[in-house]
Amino acid sequence: MLKGKKIVLGITGSIAAYKSCFIIRQLIKHGAEVQVVITPAGKEFITPITLSALTHKPVISDFFSQRDGTWHSHVDLGLWADAMLIAPCTAASLGKMCHGIADNMLITTYLSMKAPVFIAPAMDLDMYKHASTQENLETLKKRGNHIIEPTSGFLASGLDGKGRMEEPENIVAALEQFFGENTSKRNDLEGKKVLITAGPTYEKIDPVRFIGNYSSGKMGFALAEECYKRGAEVTLVAGPVHLNCSEGIKRINVESCQQMYDAATTAFPSTDATILCAAVADFKPQEYSDTKIKRGKDNLVIDLQPTQDIAATLGKTKQPNQRIVAFALETNDEESNAKHKLEKKNADFIVLNSTRVQGTTFQSDDNQISIISKKGKKDYEKKNKCEVARDIIDELAAIL
Image 1 (tube, rainbow, N blue to C red):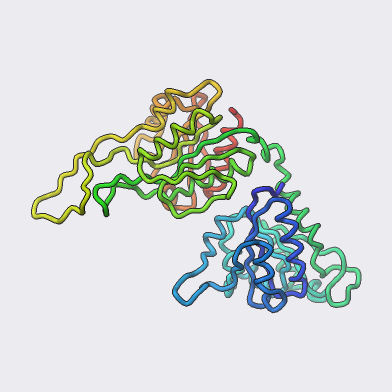
Image 2 (cartoon, helix red, strand yellow):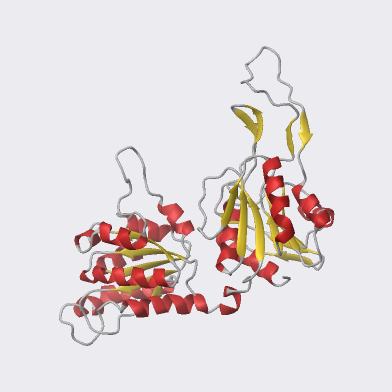
């Protein structure tokens, strides 16, 4: 159930921090990828070197990793993760999480987290039973956090009762149970080959200038991750973006439309489904200058010619057993243009979004889409792009 899952493991300053090693081993054994974020107090109980050796990733503790301005982005961690697990979680950290006191990297990551959060409290029984702690736990539950209740004694004396952090195997089992609730979706793409294009293309004018767009690639990468998690063999053709993907995804980096066209047409014949999410340039300079074009007194005129239409080419060679999903980003006449594209590209459905919806599309973490097929139109609420990816793949899986 945890295969391919990305887990942020938060460790706070509790004697139970040593058990985080067993949690990491269990998570990795089940196929998860683990990134540790630890509080300064947590490092008093277990060393980052130990944790890094287990996860094969540098442990994150401070906002700035060096004195050269390099910093850790809690926002990126919040978008990267499929779940955040805070184990052990002290009473102090519970209070900070409840009241938004963002004075360390773990709390800021928690406040930025888009994925489900699981909390395993760890403290002595009196602290656990205190009205303040119980109130904080209830508040966090109401906000949608998953509390993994301690059931087997408390740390200070080892006596039976609540307070002690739940055992690692039970914590991991709680995550497995959560992700296993939608078992029907977990492997619904197993055995399928999916091709996805993502990001922008750059069409060179000269060695230092190009025609491009604002695409960040976030939507395409979210789709690739969702397909991979659901068992598909994924080929991701990515334009020039600053994003990482799971190691199990076959990534092909390209820059121009022609390079993306070549990669997509080569991979397409062996695929079951293709999702064309990239923001491909429609035009490129007719001529390329080998040297930098200097500023002149007159206006610079650049003749443009159409680029290769990847979607149309794939649509013409599409076989009955293949499915194509295309994206339509529009500024006006959205539905009409999307329906036209559905027919022209021979797509099974179009994912429509609009630049007129604030806080979506290029560079943003959210999106709001409509899915248009021959059966009609289905509208969705504004969501994080990872959730949007699930909606799109649900629709695709139903027709594969």
